[in-house]
Image 1 (cartoon, rainbow, N blue to C red):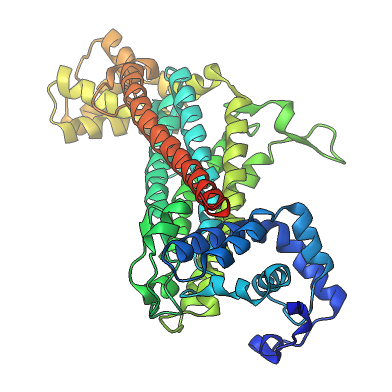
Image 2 (spheres, rainbow, N blue to C red):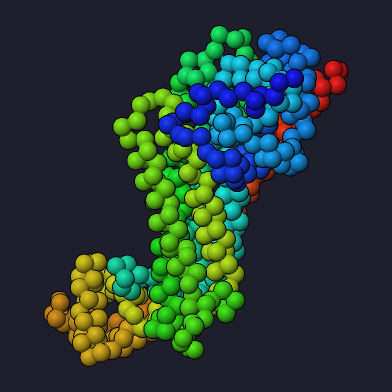
Length: 502
């Protein structure tokens, strides 16, 4: 039998204007991706060949021979492909086909009936990348809920515009991060649904005149459904852009929280600290314990935005059909997915190695005027002042204390009375104990029990509800994993059934 590698069609060497690479250059490039790409392509060839045999589009005996070779594709077979590499067939997919033809003859080329490549390879690659990301978000959400519960009574200042605003708890703060991550995870699940549509069998864009069954290989490869419109199969980009959009919504809140926590770990704030385990020492300064992990997390957003820019620029002024830009748009995403997974794992390590200094957090909250809104509410309730008048009295009280370099603990009934005289012309004579209670940050937190508020009891309720939602999300992901495993078993059973002629 003539070996396919003995045939040197010039069409392959001129594709995309490329010169034929040297033997060693080509072999090295092929070896770099063969072990990653060929197993995935083997699964696609198997599924399509099973369908071709069942539809009677290829001879059953010839199809069986093809399946036998495909079933023997392992690391040793890939090593043989690398050893027998022919630089005239520089695309790895064509190199693989050349190998199959070497094994069974020209009939191996019939695996291409009615379809083009690479569909659905890049969707499978995206799927393989996104599945671990989905799992990582589940673990991150679980960790955030655990920490929110743990620190639900750790009173600290809440900030707006980088200034003390109202007290909250560290648990409530972390639960806020959970909310953003949960929404992004939902968006990621929706992105997975778009990825897991099978574009196999679309022809080049117009379908095929062969009586193919596109549903069968889609099912055998674990896809949820067929992507029906054939030109949409080769033109679409949302399978990639949806993932990146979800990753942006993961990376933005992670970056912002990492940035804020980085400040809280400084000498001046000293509200949190990381254990030595995940900090870096300085090669010069012996006193340094640098929490550089926060910088790693922050930097992930730039990488995701770079990927987003890459996608958009590739799609700009591109025909709505099959182009290299569209194909490579999906190819550039998995690496960024890996970066986001790494950032999530890093953030989990931060949470697991966090020293929360509750006493310092509370001291900052007590001294920083963040209970001023509750003092205004106290004056509204106890002194029966209209809210805006109460607001003005409190503002004047804070101004007086601040001018003499005091803190919130220096506000007393006399200060409030002097402020009231300035605003409404008479003192209020409020109860000193009630006033002190209104200014207490711990009381503030306990009193704010409205839906979604900072009270530990309300945080506990929200955490419990979100654990139920997380359980449902985990169940959905488990079903996705099992569906892919079941599809793989079905594919192997179908192949073995045809090989054994049962």
